[in-house]
Length: 158
Image (cartoon, rainbow, N blue to C red):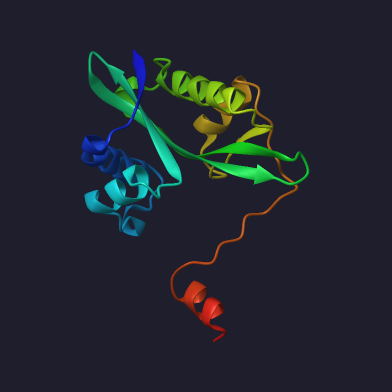
């Protein structure tokens, strides 16, 4: 099992993993990304997000997408995990843990003050895994989001 940085030629694999994750989360209808979107958003000169791939015998079995954010309270960058997915046949194989350890090491190497992510409230297997590795739920915060027309309306003052 090995972890490597994703390349633009991995766009199809990443998009397939995104769709598998969305299907697991019962939100496949929300995926609008195309392979071209993945190439542009993860691999162009202006990309702010990055991806890593977990492989077994050169076959992709999982991935993670992450980016760096900033904590004003710590005065340091943080690493934010946007997506973590391991294909069902490789769950409990150590692939997810290896992806997380790789990102934890990236956070340490970059001097980050924290490593954060979100999890759906009903995803008990993921919650159990996160507790197992020592992560603590941050229940005092709520996530808010502006998307689509609401985002445009707000930005334009409508």
